[in-house]
Structure formats: structure tokens, C-alpha cells
Image (cartoon, rainbow, N blue to C red; front, side, top):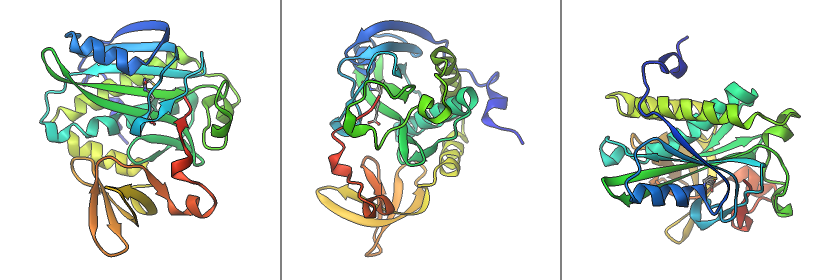
Length: 274
Ligand code: BTN
């Protein structure tokens, strides 16, 4: 069976330039700053630690030294803007590929782009648009938990790391290279005619949240419960509410109802581990 990896040698889009820091506030913030100043597509910012790591929905991303892969890349997509939401899905697909290839770890994708193992988070993705010199750019940030060290104690129950899952400290450098290769391939695919549809299907195939998952979500100040019904072509999650309404979610925090019944509380997660 052919896979996305068979196409790696044909589908390359940017030569990566990696800029490394021992410590930085946030790789996403630095990448955005460089994009604003005109840095080209493919510039990657990698740090051993972040002092103000940022997560989705305004949360912080705890980033202790050498406990995670903290990575951001500048992208300057030339596809129509309606496809841009797929970039954050690509982040999750690429991180999932890298974890599988380098660490033999199989992660589930929770919409839109959290990677989970047995319900615990191992990776998060933060995609941001930047009004930059040379046009609007996108910064795609990925945080992968390598080791469960230095985390805030309250997160131990909801997070995991490669070391915790495999018993071995992963080779961060190999994981970084695999992540960049996978990102490059998925991103090149996005720029083909059938790419958006292929990305949507690939995401649906790799996520247990795509179809038939009962979830609760806060939307525009109200909390609704419903069942997931796959993705819209542009990456929005279709949620059929209990009253039969079909919502299209672009940005929200969903919570599996089974988790809620067993004591999980989406609002209690003030920060995510890095
Ligand atoms: C989330 O799940 O909330 C997204 C977390 C994204 C964290 C990464 S770590 C590298 C990059 N720099 C940041 O400040 N955030 C992202």
C-alpha cells in the first residue's frame, strides 16, 4: 500500500533553515517576529527550553529544559485562504508521523490537533497567522513531550511523554528531522489540486474523534453536547447537537463525554505540558 512517505522525494517545498536557542520566550513568538521582518518560508526556530511557551486558547505551554521538542516554522502558503485552517491539521499529522517513525509510538488525534496516547496528551500544535512583510504568513508551532520532567504537578494526570510511553529517552534530533520532513511533505500536498481533500481524509482516518464521538464543547458562550460527523473540506469539525443542529467548529475545545463522566474537567486545564 502506498503512503504519503512514498512521495517524500517528489513533494518537497522548502529547504529548512534551523535556528537554535538554548532558551527563548516562545519559538512561535520568535518565528512570528522573523516572519514580520520578511524571513522566508522554511525558517525553523527550535529551543531547548521556553520561558513563555504558548498553547491554544491563550493557555501556557510549560517548557522545561530538554523535556520537549519546542519547534516553530514560518510558512508562506500560496493556496487560497479557505484552505489555511488545514495547516494546523497538517501539524498534527506530521507530528504523528514523526512519533511513529522515530519512536514507534501511535498517537490518536483529538480535534483539531492534539496528539493523545491512551487519552493523555503527548503533543500540541499552535498555528498562528502573521501580517508580515511580503504578505500574510503562518507560523506553525509544535510541542512534543519527550520526557515527563519539570512539569507542573497538576498536569501529570492529563499528559504523557515519549519516555513515559516507551521507557527510552528519544533522540530529539532525529525526531526534529522527521517532523520537518513530514511537514514538508504534507505541506507540499496541500498545494496540489487534490491535496486539501487528501489531507481531510487522512486526518479523519487517523482520529478517533472524527466520527461518532460524543463530545461537549463551549461555543460562543454556550455549552453544547453532540456527536462528531467528520470534517468539512476546510477542516471545520461537523458536530451534530442533541437538538439536531449541525455546527461547524473552527476553533474550540472539545471534551469527550466519557471523560467528563469519569471526572475530567476541560476548564480546569490552565496550562498544558510541554
Ligand atoms: C496546544 O496544544 O495548546 C498547543 C501547544 C503548542 C506548543 C508549541 S511549543 C513550540 C511552539 N512555541 C510556543 O510558544 N508554542 C508552540
